[in-house]
Length: 163
Image (tube, rainbow, N blue to C red; front, side):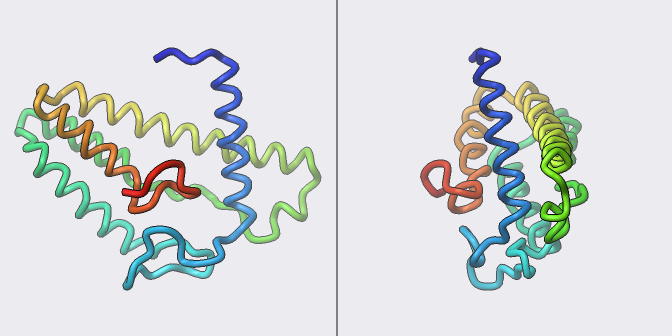
């Protein structure tokens, strides 16, 4: 599918607003998908160790369903490495209030650029693993990959049905 430049600009603006809103407004509760035992910090983020454990479990289940072959292990390793969260510098509480409007815009642009680079890295790695899959595996990936991204209730703001 080809997108017009206008659509890309609108999507980028919406992503920037989402990053800025998320950086400024801490969640009011534990958030979607927070079940018993989902430890969260004061800003509502899941404990990194728990998040990593959960991700490893979900990736293990996906790998098993795909029946990844030894020849596909390299692509699988690239894919899983790209999914690991990076720890870029999040704005500190109150940071945006201390900035002038042009400084806030620059900070939001920097955050957006970092976020976009991470999304691009994950998308490219997904294409690498997808290209290495057999037609049967692609069907499984298409079905399971859709569920994989939902995290039990949508991605921050319920952009669709829960999973």
